[in-house]
Image (cartoon, rainbow, N blue to C red; front, side, top):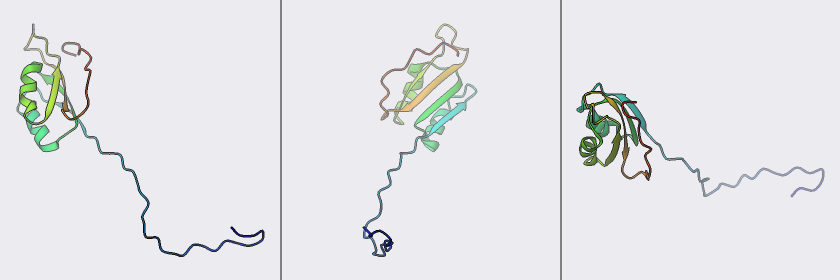
Amino acid sequence: HPQPGQTQKPDTRQRSWLPIVAMAPSFSVISANIAMSMVSIPDILKIDKPDLLFVQEINIGTENLSDNVSRLGYSAECNVDPLHPTLPGTAIVWKTILNVSDINQLIERR
C-alpha cells in the first residue's frame, strides 16, 4: 500500500489466468399455433429443440400427444376435452430431462 502522498504504481505483470465468468444456460421457449395439424409438433421439436413448447389449436389428447413426443425426449400435457374432441385446446410440451413434477389441471379448451 502506498504511503500518504504517494501513488500506487499500476500492476503491469501479465496474469496467467482469466477470470471465471459464470454463464446462465440458455433456455428455449416456443409458442406455436398448429391449426390442428399434428405434423408440425415433431418437426418443431426435431428442428428447434425447444426446452418448452406451448401449443394452441391442438385436437388430440394427452396420451396421443405424449406418444408422439416421447420418442424425441419430451413429455406433454394437453387440455382437449374428451367429451368434445373436435374442439381444439392447448398443450405444454417439455424436455423430459427438465425437473417438472407438477402440472396444474389445465382448463379444457382454454
